[in-house]
Amino acid sequence: MNEAIPVTRPVDHGTAKLMPDVDRERAWLLTVDGAPQSYVDLDDPAHLEFEYARRLGHVLDVVAEAGRAVDVVHLGGGALTLPRYVAATRPGSRQEVVEADRGLLELVAEHLPLPEGSGVALHAGDARAWLEAAADDHADVLIADVFGGSRVPAHLTTLAYAREAERVLRPGGVYLANLADAAPFGFLRSQLATFAAVFEELALIAEPGVLRGRRFGNAVLVAAHRPLDIAVLARRAAADAFPARVEHGAGVREFIGSVRPVEDADAVPSPEPPDGAFGIG
Image 1 (tube, rainbow, N blue to C red):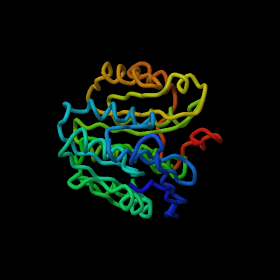
Image 2 (spheres, rainbow, N blue to C red; image 1 turned 60 degrees about the vertical axis):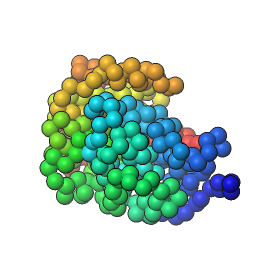
Image 3 (cartoon, helix red, strand yellow; image 1 turned 120 degrees about the vertical axis):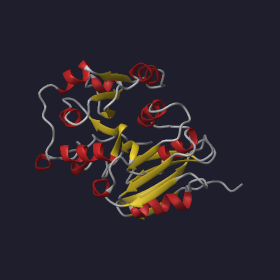
């Protein structure tokens, strides 16, 4: 077998690099402009290497009975880690991926192709524009993992965007977002306030050290109109190699405090990560 070699290519929004993992055969790390974006194991698509991806995976595991097919829209594609995960753990699911960087989609399709019959449709385009054109009650799950560079774009943070997400989801649907912030959490609080104005149930999953303001890090926002299985989520998050805490109910309301939802006119991107926050060796 030929030894896997790194692939570097200019894409629409930077320079993408695929690097083979020396410890796992046919596993790859995708970076864009040096920032880690995705990790994929082609032989084990249910393996989620990044902490935030595992937390999203925990929620995906409890949105419906184990193994039942669901309709999922992914805003942000990367190397298609979570679409591969859903295809492996919920066979027969119908999935759509919206990725603004067409060149990145082409790179991933060429070097990390999806399995035949994966049920994943790829769309090159802006996430919010695609959402606004989508039909009502279109999906069971909507996952937002969109970063322009290392920041969530401003137009994907607002009340109007949250209302579009709710419209596209079915009544029992679940919205998930990968966000990043640090104390005093102006961005994260604003996102929770925004989605609390639209959805009845909210949860936040993050490492205790991040929530205590010790460092910059990822947090997973979960929103729905139905109660979430918080006990199962909390057990799974706590059992990770890097344990996370699940906040919901009064804990989330206290975290939001007096912060108001974000209007389009006031929207700003998520904060720039400090140097080295998501770097790789």
